[in-house]
View 1: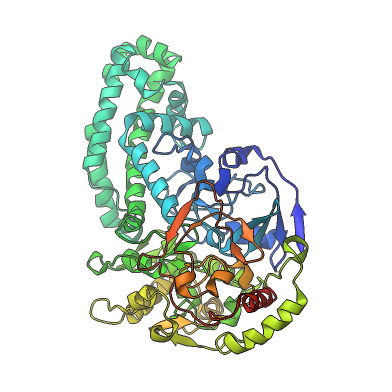
View 2: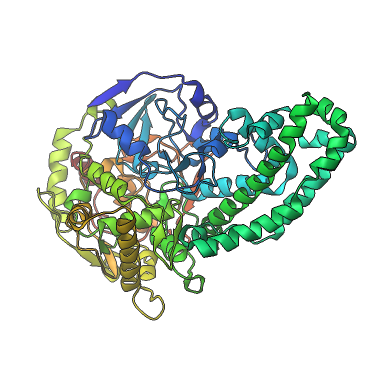
Length: 611
């Protein structure tokens, strides 16, 4: 059943709504929800629940411009696949959360990725857009992380950008919590390019600021994971080194004060206000440069991996365990993340014990901890300390269990041809049912070996690659187990609550050497197909591999209700083109039912709509 909601032209969302273009859903477009278990408060919680991801402060996101000068970063999020949320009080899209942080060096709450960034999607057909909770979203985590990293790095490195950024923070009112006089001055001072033209006072500030930015760039970056886990004595040394640096960078306000009249004219303020605010503004500006650089270095590790010589994931795909391996374990164990996989649907989670495309884990909390870290949680691998929030991760798991299978919306996509579907059911029993039974109850634990399934082998082979002389499954089980125990201790989780948070899972990991045969319920809403998303429609999946599309656009939300999957013809300015000739992207294998006649193929596709 479809339920329409009215469009809300919230002022805070205007920047997003006007820039999403063809790759996102603007607030002016309107949309409907396909009801499948979560609505109202539960859906809003799922969309924005903070799980410990800490990408950047909310104040920074509001003030940050893109590195290429394209305007506010917040207004560009739709180009990466985020869906606008007209009801969010912060003006953020679906999939971004706002949560408190223990790191008081940063101003106010932190923005992070929530699970809904990847697990709430949308489809468009016949002038109508429908959103579905638990459906894969066409989000490009790679391009988002890269643009965010580039924007923060450029702001920290260039005095002009830094002064403008600090000015916007001060104007917002949430960037100078402890320095009110400095905030007032920041709103009065001209842009950096005009400082050098404004007499000796402005030239002195501009020159000194250039020196300060260079000095901050030359110092070791603030190690946020180390600071998270460090003992007070170590942290004191870190801060002591910073104090020595700021001592060298200290603005000679006393000398500059001899030109108070010039300074007051430049700022359009009284001489007294300038004298009071100058040192505060300077301290805030230099400290912001330091924090920006520390955050950029942390994010750059993820974007660096995205820029390796590997197939780009693009919208709706990510090499989850490739990135986890490279993020959590020592640099010597890094591997090229060349196995991008489709984002899975969530409505089958409750019926499947062993999770993952290769059925490699029975560890809900461990898997979710890894997800939080990949989504931007700060963590220190040696100690197991992280900002991940175990109770929130368990709440996400509970919400996911409430998501039901979305039924084919015939009033929108066209009613199912019942005679065709009946013929297709008989074909399904012959060609598909052995691997994909449709009965109620838990799905069988069936893994098809690579030699039989024939699909791209990179995911299964990469997970099987040893780490430090032992199986990767053993290494990740032990490491995530340690993260879990430390997180539980920090959150004061007692044994009884721990059993509840674990959800009856065994915390086991294993190497299977193949791919899992998954339930096909709601298959119609999970295109593109195969574990690596290398086939755009069910019709194409039932063709012999040599006849499947070799290259096709991805990122568009236009839906083909006949072939069942992505519309790939006539796509203007595609967000991404998936090339199946590249290892990791191969569209080979899964040849079941590929010898059917065109009419039988259509019958089988019609039946698959009913699951």
